[in-house]
Image (cartoon, rainbow, N blue to C red):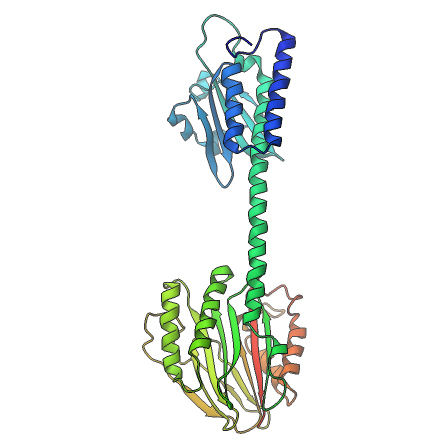
Length: 408
C-alpha cells in the first residue's frame, strides 16, 4: 500500500479488507481493551480508507460518545432519540438532512434494539473520484458492526462478572446474617422458657433481627427489630445494631439507658437515612417479671393460656435513630403469673394480604396461639397455612417471629 492508503486493484482491495477484518478479529480474540479496539478501527478507516471524520454513539446505561475523530464537539449534541433512533438501515446523508459534515450513518442493532450509531464524514479530497465512504460502503458497515458488537460483548461480560461477584458477596452476607439470628434449633426448647424463632428474608439478606440473650441465672433478654428499607445497607446496619445490643444489654442496665445508647449509635451510623423499630424485653423466670420498651415496633402479643386474656405490648417511644435524641421513653412492666405465650413479629407478617387483598394484621396470629399447645407448634402451623417461606406470592418484605412459652 502506498502512503498507507487502500490499493486500487480489485484483488488487492479484497486482500486488504480480509486482512483488516482478520486484524480486528484477532484483536477481539486477544481480549484487547475497548480503547485499543477503537484505535485499530480508527486507523483502518482514516489511514487506509482516507476517511477523516468518525463519530460513534454507543448505548450502555445511556447514550455516550466513545469515539470522535474529526467532528467538531457540537456534533455530539445531536438529539439521538428523535434523529437517530428511527433509523434502522444505513443512511446516506445529504446537506439538506441537517447533519453537517456527515456522509453516512450506520445504525448497529441487536434484536432490533439500537446498540450504536456510527457517523462517518469524508475528508476534503483533491481531484475527482468516488468518495471512499461510498466506494467501501459494505466494508464500512461490516467492520463497524463487528467492532460495536465486540465492545458490547465486553461490556456484558464485565457486567456478568460483576453480578457473579455481587452474588457471592450476597451469599456470604446471607450466611453471616444467619449466624447472627438464632433459629429454633439454637433456642431453648424445654424448661420454664421455651423459645421458637422463624426468619424469612425477602431477598438474600434482610433488615430483620431477633435474639434471645441470657443475662443472668434467672434473667433473659428477648428482642426483635426491623430496619427501614431492605438490602445490603439495611443488613449492615442491623449487624452493627446486633453487636451493639449484645455489648450493652446486661441484667441490671436500665432499659431506658439501653435505648438511649442504641439510639446514639444508630443515629450516628445511619446519618438520618434509616431507623430501626425495636422491641426489647427482660424476663425473670423466677419472679415472672417482664419489663419492656417498644420503640415504634409492631405490638407483641401476650396470651394467657389459662384465662385466655390477650395483651398487646404497645409503643413506648419513637424508633431507634429517628431522632438524634429520644424525648420520652416509657418503660412498662407486668408480671406473668400464669403460663402465657409471647409472640413478637415484624410487619412482613402482619402486612401479608389475605385472599381478598386485605392486610392480615394480627388476626391469624391470635387465631393460631389461642390454645394451650406449645407456641412452636402454633407458629409452625401458621407458617404452613400462610405458605411460608416458599409458597406465598404476596410476601414483599422480610418475615420474622420470635415466640416464647412462659411456663408458670
